Amino acid sequence: MMDSTQYIDPFAEQCNYYAASFDKAYDEKDWGKTKCTIDECEKFVKDKMTYDYAPIYYSLGTSYTDLAKYIPEYATEEIYERALYYYRIAIELLRAKELNNDKFMPYVKGIKLPLFTNYANALSHCERKLAAIHFYRSSLIISNGFKMAEGNMGIALLSYGSLVHDPGHQNYLHYFAYNSLKSAIEEGDSHIPSDVKNYFMRIINGYEPEYRTEFLDKPLNMPEYSMGIAHEYEYRRWCLHNHVFLNPLNDLLVEHSSFAADTLQLPSIVTSISQTDIPIYFGLFNQLKQEYIYARYLFYRGIEITDQPHYADKDTYLVNLYDYPQYSIRVESIKTSFRLLYSLFDKVAFFINTYWQLGIKEHDISFHSIWKDESGHGNSKYKHKRLEANGNSAIVAINWIYKDFKKEFGDSPLPELQRLKSLRNAIEHKYVKVHSDLLYPIDKPYVDDEMTYHISEADLQDYTLELLQMIREVIIELTLAVHIEEKKKYNSFGETKTIPHLYLDDYDDEWKI
Image (cartoon, rainbow, N blue to C red; front, side):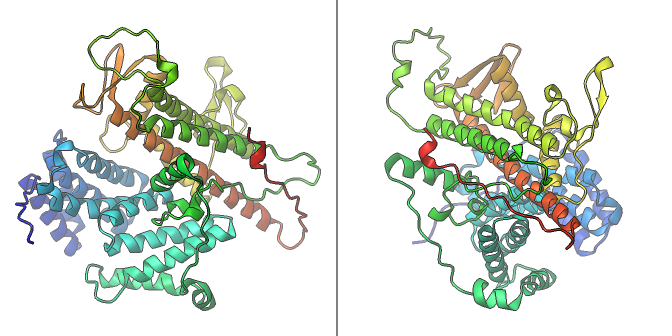
């Protein structure tokens, strides 16, 4: 039976005009024309923040990354900030409820595929491997045959696999990286330019022949593990599907039972022979993990569908103001999860200050202060070290996450994740009114007036999940950063020193009561 749906292009005519202008300039490698078109386009689109102009913002983001790729003086952080800014506007505009209509779908999917992929490429350039993989996955969920996303995801997984310290994780990540790249260059696909195919092939050929024949080219037999029954099974399935286990393998597109556990741990850490006690870093990391896991579980419990109020909510006298706010233990669980997750940024900073010996006083430690070289106020100001990348790609990634909260991108008056910061401040200090999506819909994502912060429950859930995934990214990048530093430390000894190993036992599940 033929589909009789009449498809409609929901985007403004000017989107096609500017897309064609940028494409022509790119094909001719006329970067002067690209810059002129950017200037014209930015003037035209200024203050046009509606979904029908989303493709123009995509074109702007892509054109800025083209300039950074082909013109050396444009390969700067500022250019990538502008590119990220425009990609994110496009993504945000495409979330408009009006676009959830079958008659628009081919056009919406048509822009999302290259948008998610190019945005992921820009994130990957900024060393945000996990965030990049998330958007490559998003492209492949829309179309599992989109080869540009598949190939670039392979490169991101290869980079990821080269940084993790667990040998099993390394092998799995390289296996999926290699096979993603192979699939991307399959014969018969005409959507990948020949130079890109050749690049993917060079990456594939970089693997040792023996490793390829003995492992990468063979079927992968992944052992099955029990995910429990009933409530435990549903919880672990939800974590797998949302990619929120502290486990690098949960970044893969495949959702397998063997990835359904929080296996992430710190690498081996070299200490002085005179240090007889266990380094504090392992205890700090245990606490980081436990608080993340608790916040994740609180969120999960808060979004569970229920047809009965919690027993702790019964016989609680509240006044009905006829504005349909959500008052319940369930909603408070989501808000508490958000607060706990947000607090982990500063807990990560505490770990960083300790491990990298930045010298920040305890009461001044924050996710903000570790990037500065001075803390305190007035006469109490003092100098200290700041966290520097020094060739550590994971620190670069953490710094780009920090920029999302603190730095203006492009012409944006607010950082990309200002809405998360605003919600956190409101939950801590103001009256947050969570509204029913059906009974009291809110047109905007949130309304923050003088006394009350209004947000729908759907947006509260979306923001909390976004924060959950971001905190996971920070924690995993933290382990990668430590691993890179420990490799530097180990390599600095050369072959002149023997380093004895002290093994630590596992903390048994039976003790977690």
